[in-house]
Length: 88
Image (cartoon, rainbow, N blue to C red):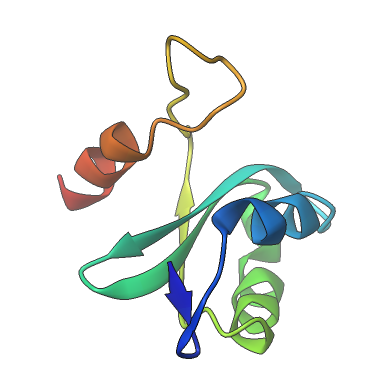
């Protein structure tokens, strides 16, 4: 994905975000041409997550109850299924 005009690998951001208070899982995707941080966790931290994401150059944050995982690799996010979930 491109964050602040630079190519960035989502995994590096996701590793850092998983350390934030209240986060259980996360994914960085491009949703409608906008870098988007999708977080599953305790929603009471949403304002803090949004502010922190902006400092990383990610303008959009979304909270979900579940992030789908790839059936072949249980440790990988199924990004296509996540996009479909967010666009529904």
